[in-house]
Amino acid sequence: MQKFWKIFEYGYLIIAIVFFVETFINWNTDREKAYLLLLFAVVAMFMYFFRKRFRKKRNKY
Image (tube, rainbow, N blue to C red; front, side, top):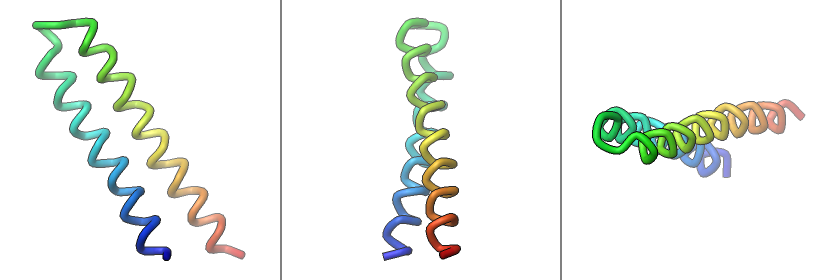
């Protein structure tokens, strides 16, 4: 089960990277879409670190 949760952590990281790349691609053409993608990337990064911390805390007990 631990491998399952670890895969989801890295999934959030991959999604964040994709959103950052899409942000840079759309920056000059559609600024509003770029800001929205940047927001999603930041949220995905937050979820990656949150899930990682939560999993380590749960493994401690």
